[in-house]
Image (tube, rainbow, N blue to C red):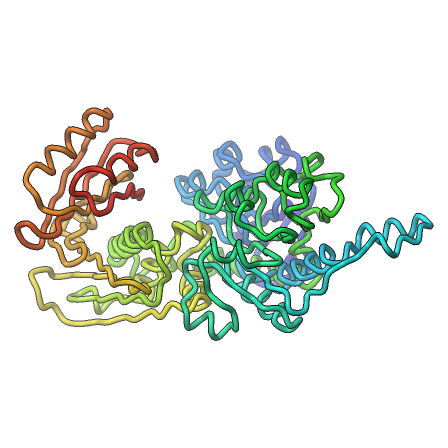
Length: 528
């Protein structure tokens, strides 16, 4: 029986034809996604679900989707899909991360021009029969400084277009290397420097815990008087109430926004303010982009349903059925090593070196390297996956080196990941034991053995008597239960590491107290 797919949002008819040409039965019901009850009743009949942003794939929907194998999102954002719930039910979630990059970048440039020349307000005034030429005094883009926050695929295109307009482009992106910045023709700087120097600021970063309200009161205080803000990335990157205050005071001369904290944005504190240009999340709304993402999602879903090929999956590695049983534990290890290193890296990354030793060196290390890069990039780019991670690393100029060698130490299989930043090198290594569980066995050259749990506390400290007692006492006083406690050191009295699994989250205040504990060099709460 041929697999069956439901398209519950508006997609190009080309996608319907792609499914049919690949031997997939397809029902095109573009309004079904807006009717939760109707979707709930229908979803059980389908192997695949193709959506855009209107359909909300909740845990309740997934519970009724007994045959569902894959969800394809035509576009990059998957905020409308409960990915953990999909994963727990064995449903692959795919997206199309690069299909609308040019369109979104062009919209950002258009919004910047609109904000610079007050085009929407001037249009309304002129069509109302007024001739207020003196009212609409704009500014040139030529020779102005554009600050780009997030210089990935879309940010890089915006930079290229801005350079063509003879602007000076500066960029903040923790993953942008100095070499890649030179290739792009931009100046790589820290965020506080960008805020102080930019005449225009354009946001091109995903919404994560680290980027939420990246433009807050403190950020606005550092900006130039008369700065102009453009956001065609994600709502929630800007504190909208603070932006309103700065627009009313004149600190911000204009803002152009395609995205909002709450969407659909029928009401917003910025609506009605002069010098504000708003569009209803049109970044990807061109016929070319709609066609690209529709065709791409149909091809990806068909390939999986017919051939078992996995592309651009957010919750499953790209591994063939034949090699999966042997490779899967090492994929998990590689991703954990990357996630470990990514959460500890705080400066610009130049390169990543991954060493495979023993039997693992003969496996599909491409999948393992992709898993390691996925883990490393995930703390800042939550939508990254095993397919997109290598491309994202290349875009940011991160040199990736793979080294394979025969067994030379005590472990039959051994993976070591080394991060090269502008300041230092830091490595973490692990193996998979006979029980199939990954273990961390070395951090920064210090030997220890630890199985990673959901919440880990990493402490780098000076090896002095009494430190472990002080650490345990502080955690006990704060009612933090320790599940495992793993220690290692270089030599007596030198650098040491404590890696603890704890039961539950560690709040910022407690982490600040731990950082101030006598002997602590670095303290980090890590999640896996």
